[in-house]
Length: 393
Image (cartoon, rainbow, N blue to C red; front, side):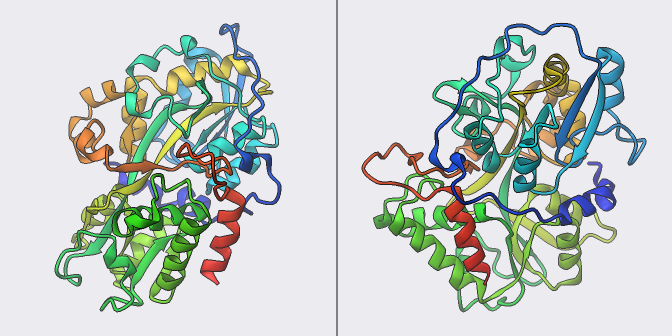
């Protein structure tokens, strides 16, 4: 694991706070404006603009040890201009300007870009590695609409429950540990800072309040949504922090000011690799969990569409997937990458069906219920954003 990586630009990028999309955004309706998919990859335009999560498109500028963009430029003649973003809302807003050819969108922003007309349909026949990408990530609700592919899987990770082993006893196995109003660890518990975290409460309620009838944590009607929001308002009273900057979050575990909370596997690995190790462990709770799956999307009015497709083919190749996965700390989408990083893939459950079957990948909530119901209207993302502001107070 290359976990010394995040001290610089990532800390800065993840501190950025962007305004969330709301109001009458067409993305909340679940409607789309489909454009024709590209028919072939023509001559490269000599450039490509990439909007990415930190450490998804490294050219050696931040650290000479991390550079896979330079080889892409040499191989294709497409000079890459890379901009990092810190939140999904920021990614959605920046991609909407039309200044970027491709974006590494998470599931809580991807459908918004489709509905707004910013994302182009992807011609998967032009993708040299598409057949090697994990089947459970392809053509899913968070990257495709009505059978049309808009996102090419890049990598993924589960949202896990992390705790300090020297403080928290017995070891937790349920999200109940974070929702218990009488927790002995009150004031030292953390939750992820994003409207999409409402889905984590919904996952817990799916298991503990079956009468609510929640089938999909991103498809919540009035009653179901209110139950999730009420649970999170109650939780707010005993939290120490809402986190989004995971470098700062790691420091809080080291200091002991946070002893339990939602987390990512890469965070647990980083803390365990401390010298001496910070005593933490993580678990996928018995109720299952949410997860993020990032996908490359091409802008519908991309200035460099041929170089954009060249990037999709390059970034999903096995060797590059292996490098990105070990640098960022995630499971690669291309399972052939695991030939060279077998231990990493085992740690991140890259091809562990029993594990990923328990996950609910981030998907943008829309008024059209994603669970197939047509007799009710579900809460859309703008309503999740408004509720999140209310939850945090």
